[in-house]
Image 1 (spheres, rainbow, N blue to C red):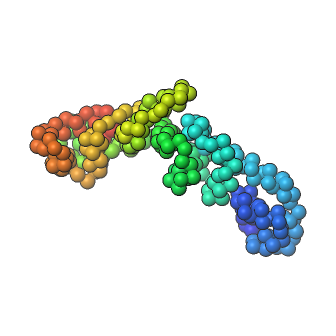
Image 2: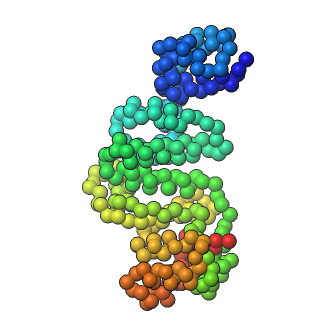
Image 3: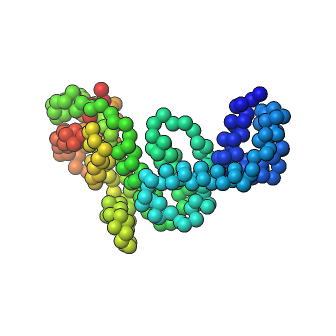
Length: 277
């Protein structure tokens, strides 16, 4: 007797629409693809397809509802027929699996990756700022719901970074940096207030920072020079190397080099970068 075969079939028929459709058309032929005894095949062949179909859509709807709780603004921008068009494929590509942590967190991140793929494939192309709004909501949700991490030392074990040019700074594990095609902060505010407005196409870079030991996430805008500076804080370069490399990239040249330690000090104080060790 193969209990595994029964479990595999039930999992497939409740999460994969092609299997459900095949079972509705020819139960015996579909069951022959599984490692089942004759008694098990007879038992499973008697399952009411109407009820299986009902359970299939209930399960998919529940998963989408759970994942969408993380993206309320994105949900408001999706077409009305989103569930009808995409839910079966979502379920087939992402069958339910046991998770060690929060089911909502796992489902939300899975749904995020699915939505990004649909947007990049051109299947969800309107509004044009959909990906920006989705990414914004994902980062807020991810940081506010991720397990907390121990406090990381400032560069050189809490000492002022400008005093340690050989220290190797790195982005703090509770910080995310993201670039957006639209001026996303006023756009999000308008969506939250349900105000109709023409969003401004204005590329910007945001820093998402989770406050230590809290679930609050702060969002702030940074300029391109700061973004480039932070991108060099990879744990491999020393502060001296970062200052030298950045000064060679920008037009200000050596005049900027003396300012970089102070900028790194402020980034450390803000909790955006920390020691790599």
